[in-house]
Image 1 (cartoon, rainbow, N blue to C red):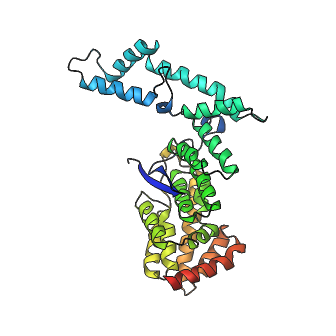
Image 2 (image 1 turned 90 degrees about the horizontal axis):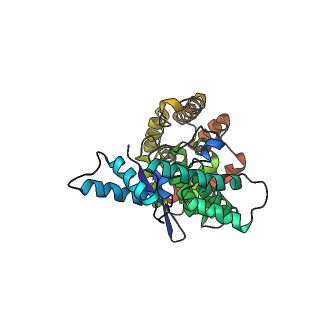
Image 3 (image 1 turned 45 degrees about the vertical axis):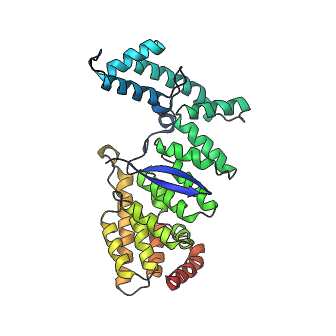
Length: 330
């Protein structure tokens, strides 16, 4: 399935996020994930991005009437030797090693970084180092700087497992509840377990209730629900329930309970995935049974959520009042 995009809007800025695919290094250790570099972003010795250079050489190869090489890769190697003295794969390997040798020790450092060291991390991020992008993003988020969204979105789009979850946390702290939910869903759907299990917490329903633009909220949920097995379907079902559209909401939740999470690649299916499916399906099925027996939806969600470990009871009064107002206004 080809990756799609969704757009996050905050303070007159827009950030595109890739959706529809799995994020990288979901089950990797830190030492493996921290070495990830987006090759297309590497700055070559001629000050050109590797992705642009490679695309240009492919275009040149495709438009040649008499091709000097038997494949596009051999033509790329020939041009790389001419321009940089190394074949393409070796050139990229050397560049990645230099970036990691400089950047990784700084990302792992225990001391306060100097201005020069901060610059080295920035340079690595600009050369495709994904963990450096994430480091810059989280550092900016710690100071409540909205520029964190640029770097975190860059890290997400290059496969970082936690970047979009950080975006959700920042946007929630800034009161942008719809976009915080969007990022949480995107993170969950990409394979971030923390984001996925957060979807069912009471705090997410509280955030949803705080949205002042119900039409925008519904539109966002509809867009993401259209992607394969998205957790947005759960929130869409909940929204329908709390708007008084019980039949629609129950139908969505029943369908969701049968397929609460998209299936990861075979090599990534483990006990954690199986446990998540069991817990979430049991939670939804229990809510449906309770509602069918006459229990109010909110009370059913709270009771079943407590059993599953999702509920934060300090938010109960706020949630009950908010959804009562939503039902009255809907």
